[in-house]
Length: 430
Image (cartoon, rainbow, N blue to C red):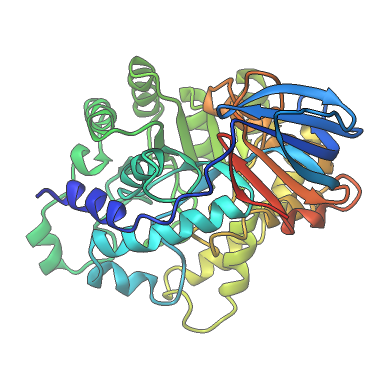
């Protein structure tokens, strides 16, 4: 049995009890409804769900004789949220670096099942997993109903350059490096346009849904620089052009200004993190319509943990302290400058299931609560290139979450999700 088939078999073996079978028709009596397109709250509505889709949206507390009623009259209903930047196969801890030498893919698969369910129950009905070989298999297991979790758009292995943020051999000794050999496009490491083209094709072969590149150094990789550019513009353009052949969009991890600018110029769909975003980059992003996914949560988390002796290796600690603390300010500045923003946390850096805290951090940065909710609904759907989710409208997927009270008046209520429905199946109810 191949390693990938073994992972899928393990995920199947972890099959959780299925959610309660839904009746033919459900009627959700929502005290308020978030209109994601307009970015405003509507009064009480009844949302009728049939066969996993939204069948009707009626004003007020409508009577639907054939339906099972779920009373959400003290709640605000929202389209299911999407986190555009997660890593479901891992979670940061002081042991993370040594575990890479001790654990097998199967170990990470077992962990990922629990992380996925926590994410779904926190209100995130879809995620974009930007780097992790477990994710495509977890996606399939969730899609087959074997385990509970959000809908996953999986990147699989991130594409890096030699020594770059996603080079899997960073930090290992010479003896191990000699045994493993230099990683190439199959392992997601490229050093030319031809390599870049092959790496995208390999991700297609592996079953990815999206392409992720590490356009600059990173905070948590075992390497000195967190912001140096690591791709040429030609390499980025080849990746973007090849990705288009397969219907893929490209997300670019980027902290440094120059690498960010090259990624935007090369045509990526989104910039992730964006710490040292300059006026030049802002101008390029607005001209090209490039999305920004701030991941404020991750920045704050690593900056906090950098103060703890021993949490990070010495080569990582100064990067975490310096770069992490800047992302929240960058997010607010980008919003004020008119850059398009979508929602992402980089969860896996912090504990899975805490994703909604990003809403709070966005509002703290000066982003209006309504815009933050749009970032995780209609904006996220646009980034993914899908048109069947992100809004509560007839014919769309029945992905719906509910929180008590008014999230536009008090964004903190997003941490108290009372109701979660994905594809018409209820996973959490008051």
